[in-house]
Every structure is written in structure tokens, then in C-alpha cells.
Image (cartoon, rainbow, N blue to C red; front, side, top):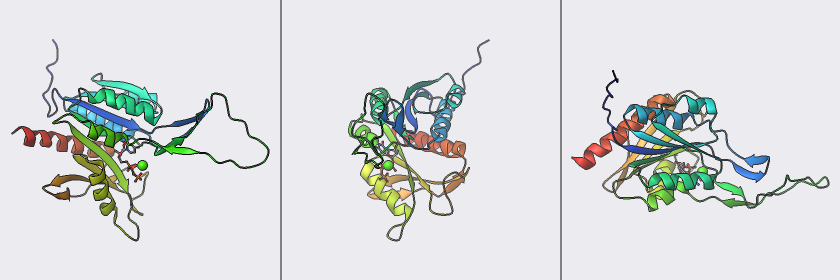
Length: 238
Ligand code: CTP
Ligand code: CA
């Protein structure tokens, strides 16, 4: 007998998620990239699927072993560069009820990509010319359809002028998202730890408000984000 499907809070919803880290090619064998493993985005895809959603995962340079462990209800499109990720997220936006930008997007890319392998010349150093990548998240917000919920991620540190929270609130405004998952990575709470200290920012009237801080694994964070998403829809639809 077929096993009856359990009904979750995201049943029948389509969620587009970007994950991993983009790589910007310099030549056929070299790129500029970052260390994002994609584990947070994978955890989100799993949590959304477990809540009943149909997931479109746009995966930037994620280990195939991590991807192959995902359930069948997650459709995976693999990309390398920011421009490829942008094209696939725009395509996924068309039928998405929610968009989650968990990918670490390269802010810059080489101005030129050479068709053949770059050669060194003489014994001088070299300067790379970089151009700024488009802000994928802001682009998605600008072309959103009505009722589409859009979620961004931000890891911030404080400095002598502003707290990490100040920067997160400013980013929330600049991006125009519905929710911003703010990961406080100031000094002692550095990258690479298993547990993240996270707050979810949203808007209440004219104010940017933050949820209480919670500490947890990437799976715990994902569950909170999916919960926040589901309760948003309850508000909109009741
Ligand atoms: N993001 C994006 N496109 C970019 C840069 C970032 O879509 N070119 C998204 C990320 O996926 C994330 C959010 O924007 O959801 C915040 O990323 P972050 O790097 O913190 O923001 P930036 O605008 O690049 O600001 P910063 O100068 O602090 O790096
Ligand atoms: Ca950035």
C-alpha cells in the first residue's frame, strides 16, 4: 500500500532556494571563490521538503555527496558563477511561493575571462580587474510577484562604529526582503563553529524588529526559518 503523505505546514508550496558559494572563472582552470560548503542551504531544502514543499534548489559548487542525500521532492540545478545562479533563480521565481537566498554570492568577478590558460610573464606581480556582480537578491525582490515571500541571509560583525545588529538592520532595509536571517559572527562567535547565533529580522509597521536570539545547528536554524515562513502565510491568509 502507498504510504499516506503527511501534511506539513508548507504542503503544496513551491520554494526556490539558492545554496553554496559562487565561483567566478578567470580562465579554463582557475576561479575566484569562497569557502561556503552549502550545508545551510541543504539543511533548508531538507526542512522545506519535510514540511511538504516542492523545492527548487539552485546549488552553487556543492559536493555531490551532499546533494545526493536530498529527498526526491527537491529538484536540483547546479551552477557555478553568480550570473548562472542569477539566471536559474530568475527562472525558478516564476512559480515560487517563497525564495530563500542562502548562497554565498561573490561580490566581484574578473572583468575578463580568457579562453586559454593565463601565462605568467616575467617576474612581476599582477593586478586583476574585477567588476561588481549584480545583487541577485535585490533583483528578485524588484521583480517579485504579489504574495511571494523573499528571505535573505546575512552574517555580520560589529565594529567601533556600529553593532552587528545595526548592520543587519541596514541590510534588511537595503535588500527589501520580508525576512532576514541574521547570523551574529562577532569575535568569539566565529565561523566554523557547529552552532550559530541567529535572529530573524522582519518589519512591524515602520520598525525593523528582531526575534529573540537562538543558538543551534544548521538544521535547527532551518527549522526556525521554515516555521517563520509558514507563520507568515498564516498571517497573510487569515
Ligand atoms: N546576495 C545576492 N547577490 C549578491 C550579494 C549577496 O543575492 N551579489 C544575497 C546573499 O545571498 C544573502 C544576502 O544577499 O542572502 C546578503 O549577502 P551579503 O553578502 O551579506 O550582502 P552584500 O549586499 O553583498 O553586502 P556586503 O558588502 O556586506 O557583503
Ligand atoms: Ca557580499
